[in-house]
Length: 267
Length: 269
Ligand SMILES: Nc1ncnc2c1ncn2[C@@H]1O[C@H](COP(=O)(O)OP(=O)(O)OP(=O)(O)O)[C@@H](O)[C@H]1O
Ligand SMILES: [Mg+2]
Image (cartoon, rainbow over all chains, first blue to last red; front, side, top):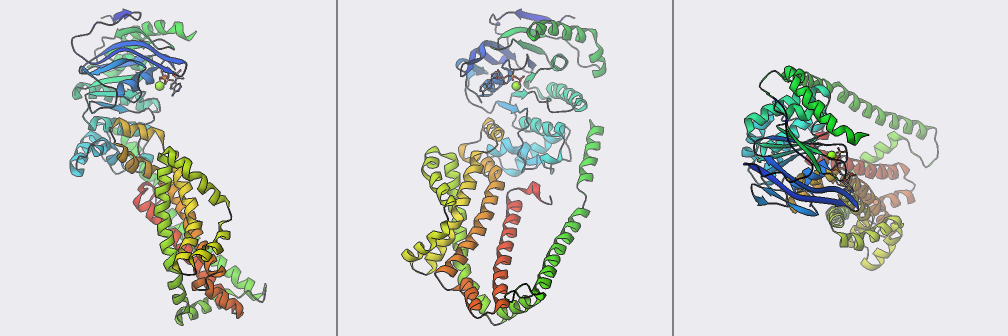
């Protein structure tokens, strides 16, 4: 198996059969700083796509534009063919800094998206409890965020995003504040979740290994101004033991290939 | 995952052991006992002929309660105090929130309160009496003049400095403007708002006593003046001590309300 390199250079990608998120011609300036230049991207439904690139290349900016939290200066975002420019129920965000309410229990934090939608208490707490179990936090519902480790807090953030039953989950470096052991564990959980939740994940990371390990598709962004420089589909069989994936030749080759592509930007 | 989580759970329950709580209560009692002892000794030396011992003061306190003069005085002092403090709390938090959220309100009101807080507002109290006489209104206003600025300014600061990432979170989960204020901004700001309320309440006590000492010879202020003029120093100290104790108690109750209602995660901390 070889990683499929879909394209090189910033030519528009052909609309694939079933893409849930379509980014067209998105540009963004912060004052005079050009953060993103004319981004065209499609995110296939039910797949996990990673945005990978050097620090400051606009990954967070692009993710937040898709989330409707930042407005683009040019271009459009379409979800299921409908243009959007503000947050919507079909998207949910997992924040790099967790963004948990310190005064609320895990249960209330997880149910918060539903609370804002006016769902009644017993109903939303039942849903929240289900996802608390799903992310491996069973029994922690009554704890407060400060009683949890970083890894557990990020699980709360993930459960909150899952609870609102959005089709698209947007994750901004969810593991950057999590220690290495928890990170591995979390990556495996994410792969499992993606298989049985049937949701589309858009995932920001600056770890090549992480991207190759968990993604169906990797979008490489060039340094500022961020442009799409390459799209890679690592065809990795994730049904096997995770230890074996990390030692798999194809996995290592793909990591190397991406590193070769990114190296030019580091010097 | 199961294993690592179980280990973390063990660490969490270890951290919340209980012994420290009992010990801290014991230490607090010791601090009070130490204070009373030092007072007793200073009174016996004596430091000044006008300085009664702790025991004399306690006896005087019981006597003042028994003969009804202290309860009567409090009846007259507490009404304007309570009214002024409650009005200041609601008005102050309301105005402060408004100024924190709304630019025009900020420009219109905040400078006024900054000046008020910097000014020796006690100097206004005779003026208030001049306009509003010596009744309830004047005393209530005196309380508010002292209590309001710090409450408004603290609330305003807290609302302005609300956790940005929680605001973004609320927006991304489709919170309305009103939900953002009620569910994110106010709870997030509540520690600083309550710090302002505590300062405001303490200032309110100052306001009411000042009003009674300076212009309206009624209530606690009058009782203090009266016993001083008769050189009943134990009674005078008992009265002063009682209002300090009441003020402290109010602040403790306020803290309890804050933790109960707004910041449950700090319970037992
Ligand atoms: N609010 C802002 N105001 C001004 N410049 C900004 C702002 N946010 C981001 N930038 C700039 O835009 C560029 C892209 O930022 P962004 O946060 O999207 O990068 P990133 O790829 O997520 O980086 P990192 O890997 O460090 O998280 C950076 O150069 C950053 O300095
Ligand atoms: Mg970023």
